[in-house]
Picture 1 (cartoon, rainbow, N blue to C red):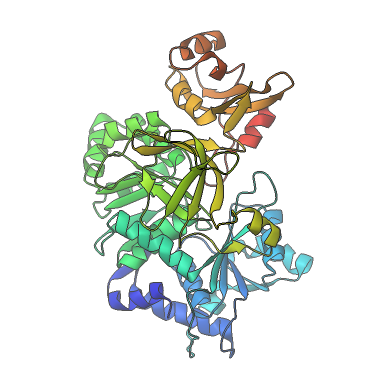
Picture 2 (picture 1 turned 180 degrees about the vertical axis):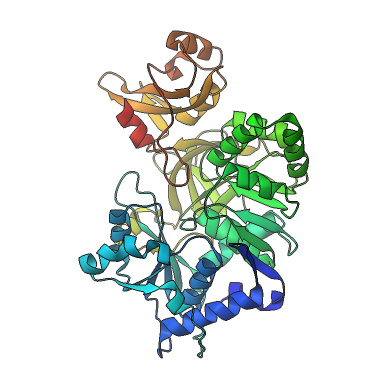
Amino acid sequence: MINLLERATSFKDRVALVSNGFSYSYDALLDTSQSVAANLLKGKTDLQEARIAFLVPPSFEYTAIQWGIWAAGGIAVPLCALHPLPSIQYVLEDTKAEIVIVHADFHTFLMPLEKEIGVKLVALEKVMQTNQCILPQIDLVRRAMILYTSGTTSKPKGVVTTHANIEAQITTLVNAWEWEKDDYILNILPLHHVHGIINVMSCALWSGACCEFLPKFDAERVWAILQSGRLSLFMAVPTIYYKLIAFWENAAIPEQKKMSKTTSKFRLMVSGSAALPVPVLEKWREITGQTLLERYGMTEIGMGLSNSYIEERRPGHVGLPLPGVEMRLVDSHNLITEENQPGEIQIKGPSVFKEYWQKEAATKQAFTEDGWFITGDIAEMNNGLYKILGRDSVDIIKSGGYKISALEIEDVLRKFPGVDDCAVVGLPNEEWGEVVSACIVTKANLDTSEISEWLKNDLPAYKIPRNYIFQSDLPRNVLGKVTKNEVKKLF
């Protein structure tokens, strides 16, 4: 049996999941997932890495389906309910999934694909009917899951992880963040992404802890759960922290005090999936006493670096490589950079994915000849901890011979009075290559010349934006990450 599922047998009577108002034990999760496996096998001995797609909200049922696919020897392909139909069609065609297990809420939405591409929709209730059979022995080197990248520069690629990759991604975090069986976490993150699947749900279930699902974010509901006293950890993306802060600021003073008191008792709060603006970190610390732990990860590697659980958590930094993760910074010639010089992050280790699904050339291109995964992200060592400068393709602006970090400019710009949020991009320019340009979210009437003059206190002239536009919000993907290519179009 896969180790994640095998460990669950030692936590049988403990509550594994809280979902839709019900509590489910590890025993119930195992029984249901084994019924799912038997119904998928239908007399076969092994699914032999057949791709099984599923569109199910975050819930007990979601977890049972995922575990059932794994127990039967299949590859789990979780779909995102927030994606439009063409995006889902792309994933189904790319993986050649023959069936989609579908929750009743999404059956009508997916029906056109039955005719369009011949995929079979199978009702969630059907695969969850009680059933038993002898399950196959699954080797950990077998493929377990395909998650799709956001595809900002090309068509999304299917990132294939094995059971061994997933186990490495889980155990490094369980050890680094000191997960225990008495932990309790709220999961408000999409479950087609490593943040929700690995960092929250799977780490909890590996540890014998409890994971509560809230399928749709609602600031008032989240604050109510945070105040319930049952949580010990909380993980979210920066956008969620921003919205929770806004709710706190609009609450009456007695309510603010209650919210602050209960959240101060958490043992760990984590932010990830996008760069955390320093003002958001500082405001969250001011109202809760919690210094958010920032980390760095990707679909292809799980988590690679993390600030320390017990030592310094420095704003704007992502700490050091996690145990079992090898990391190096290289220049444009793939040579290791000198100390304290920026470079591209390359990663090695058991958590690194196996391949891009059916894309041999792209897989080969993603690794160096000596086996390092090329992340495309630029970082520098800064007084003992790593700081992400941005993604080479979208956050590193090449202007007048300089390589400029958009994230650095954003951090400074957010401190200007009246700036609620911002995104900095490079726009093509014949003379400079690219020019620094800032999209600002504000409710105030700001003067761009005043902003530029103010920025000169912290930034050299070549980093000052030449173009400004004002918007009511920034374009984001389903994880709340700003989509820089969409920002460029706004100009």
